[in-house]
Length: 385
Image (tube, rainbow, N blue to C red; front, side, top):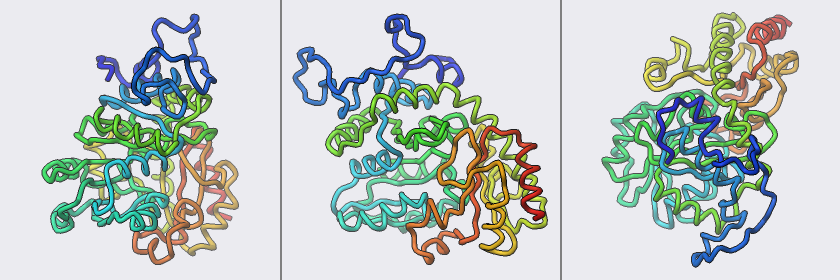
């Protein structure tokens, strides 16, 4: 870990950069080489090879990611799901048990319910707001506890300090998906989490032009996960590394703008008579608002809400807005809007979605870098139509 007293804005620009600069290049060059000259390495995983995630482009990203979350080490992967799956399959094997939050990204939910049983891995789901119920869920072979900083798509905030306390009291690895908060708003290692995961596709890169993942945390665990990743092959190519590296340099500026804009948009939607319910932890009406204020530097750029009139109203609204693009994903410079039931959580059955509280007419909005005033004007005309 690169330990400095610099603030995250400075770390995002300077941490992990080569010193001295390579041929004086201010921007990190792309090392478009699959393999590198041997230097007498005796361990296969020490060889320089793209699949082993140790090219100069990988190394620079790993140092930067570790620095911005104040962690010991980090690792990039080919996607957010590669980060999640490789991490959990490093920590868990046949006969093991995982405690997981009961509202998660749809891809994670599918992995846990549809793939893990075939591997002999059991999953027990917990309510992040009810620590008193967690002990009854622990089994002799429970190995890890998995939560999201801000849940996708209902924007819940679990009792994260209690998650860490509980996990370590029961000798469990505490794992968190920090995608929605980003390191700007929350840094899990500072709160005791062993591993922090990201879909680098989202805020870390911020430009909707790559798919990537990141794993940040304790060095000993990162080393184990990296060896597993080398076997699974989910490495990130050098050009994607370059784009993620470049995108991270503007992360603080982007996220703070999105924090402010999303709060303005959420307040507008909350007050509009056509809106039936809204989920955003920055609103005083949110059940986890006080907790979010204590934990986060900002509340993020994603808002979810339901309109009166069900699916028809939701579809009409999405078709009438002119600035947000109707598309999956989030965290980019452009605002994106979608119904999770048809995109991020479409792999779940209707019954599973309802059990998680995700209705078919729930709308998820990722606020981009447009003027919040223009977004609100756009939403006004869409809701009045």
